[in-house]
Structures are given as structure tokens and as C-alpha cells.
Image (cartoon, rainbow, N blue to C red):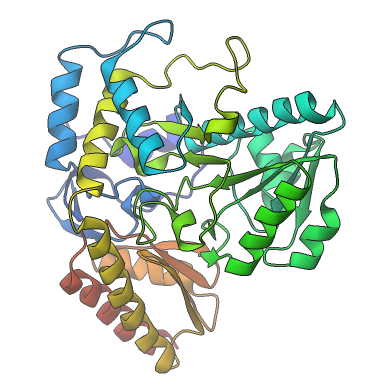
Length: 396
């Protein structure tokens, strides 16, 4: 008997997502397959989780090998995959040491706690304030929701945590005005993902770096979505010429298995001591083994350069829609892109795309986000742009 998956979800799963009317049973490369065997071109990648595509052979092999050897122990002991993945993250980014968690929100919780603890140590209990940006997104736990300066997401859960200040993105005057000795950190996304795929201005990031140094505060980069090749560099901070003190990762780190990481530069690597932070599942050998495989692919010769080239190709193709008057703006970095529509039709475009076996993502009434697998091919980009061209001409 075939289960009615839609009915089972409606009956037994909390309605925290507006799900699309399709159930997938298999994935391979840039494609997902439903129960009828229909193939869908995936330009969402599990919200930038499947950056290497679905069921990448290197990840599958690593997971199969590890799951047959050791699935889990606990963080009272050492495992080889955890040591290897921490080394890879540290040596390819800002150095220092890594805390492994299970998600991006948990990685950001670690960064927040590290900043608060260091602030207390260097400036007393009053040095606890964290500045984040309007339109940013850092998670849905109570601390990371408070850091997420989006009132609509926060409203049902007030009162929020004290000690957070919000400033407009790219407003250097507002940022400077918010800084004083009570600030322990500035936390930002190099490209605001859930907020609409808005890259920060280089000048703004440079000013943030200067201000944190002046006021003895940390600069934290949330690279949960932007990290690991998505923007055409291994980490998005490399576009700005500014290194953060703490960086958070998750999403694609485990090749689609749940894992997050907070990496602290050498000067701050030992702020969190035994008993100050912990996790039961974080850094387990199976997701860490997957992460080692992910790094092997990302750091292969020419891979990241290929992502950057495909990002430029897709950006140029999307700008054809802008030139034709079908969209009002195209923006992003690498293969993290978005278009704004002249009217609030994004949800309808996404629905029509699904009917054409293309998976897209609406993040606002008039905004569509593109997060294709980093292994996407130009012909697939062409397929999506041709669909958008035809569809938007009819809808406009």
C-alpha cells in the first residue's frame, strides 16, 4: 500500500513549513525524483545544503565507510574524522580552533556565547552588547532569533534576549554611532541570504573591522549559507579582504548531513573552556567524515574557479531578463543569486516552475532566490532562464 505522504504530514507533523506539493524519493546530481519517477531540476539545493548535488559519490562513500566502522561516541573522547575536519576548516580559513555543532543556529549560539564570555573577561559584565544588521538572519533559537533583526519573525516570541542592537546594513554612520565600549561583537552575513540575497558593501565591512578593533570587540561572520564555495570563493569573507575573528559554518559542510561549526581565530581559540559550552551530537564521526569528503571536492584544482565562472554566466543570463523589463533587479555573488519581480508574483512563479519540473525558491512576495548545486551546468542555467523568460512574459 502506498502511503499518502501529504496526509500523514498534515496529521502528524507540525505545520512550521509551507511545503510544495511534491514528495521526493531519490536524488542524483542536480536532480530530484518523485514517486512517479519524474525528474526535477533543483535550483534550491536544500537551501544551499546540497552544494555538491544530491548523493555525491565521494560523500556517499565516506559516509558508508564511516557508518560501518563507528557511528557515534561522545565528545569525552577523540575521533579521527573530527580531528581531520577541524584541521581542514582551520587551515583553509582563519586558523584557530573549531567547535562542532549540529546546525547553523547552534554554530551561531556558540559564537554569541564566545563573544559574551570574552567581553566579560576583558570589560566586565557591561561589555555584552552585540550589534547585528537589519534584514539579517542567524537562526531560530531564542538567541539567534534575537540576533535576527526581522520583526515579523521575532514578534510571536517576545520578550527577546537583552543586549542586541540593530543597525541598517551598509550604513557606516549608524554602525559607528552604535559602537561603544559595551559592544563585545558585531555579527553579520557577508551576503544577507534569507533577507533577500543582498551583498554587503566592501566599505561597510572594512569599517566594521576598524570599529571592532578600536572598541576591543569581535567581528563575527555568519557564513552558514555563504561559506564553502557558494559565492565563488571558498569563504565569502575572501571577497572583502577582511578576516573575521569568528566564523560560523553549517548547511553544506556535511554534504547534506547535519553539522555546524564555529571557528575562532588563534587569539580567541581558547575562550570557551571545559564546562562553558557543549553538545551531545556535534562533531560526530559520520557527519565529520562527510565533511572531509566535501573539502576534498571543494579544494580540488579548478573547482572553486569553476563555480565563480558559472556564477558569472548565470548572472549574465539573469540580466537578460532585467534588460527585457521582466525583472527589476538582479544581484548576488557566485551561485547565490536573486531577482526582484515588478509585481508580487514570486510564489506563483515557483508553483509554475514546479509544474515544469524546476525547483525554485521564493523568499519574498516579489523575490526569487537561486541556489543551484555548485556542479550545475550551463545548459541547466539556460533551461531555468528560458523558463523564466517564457513564464514572466505571460504573467506580466
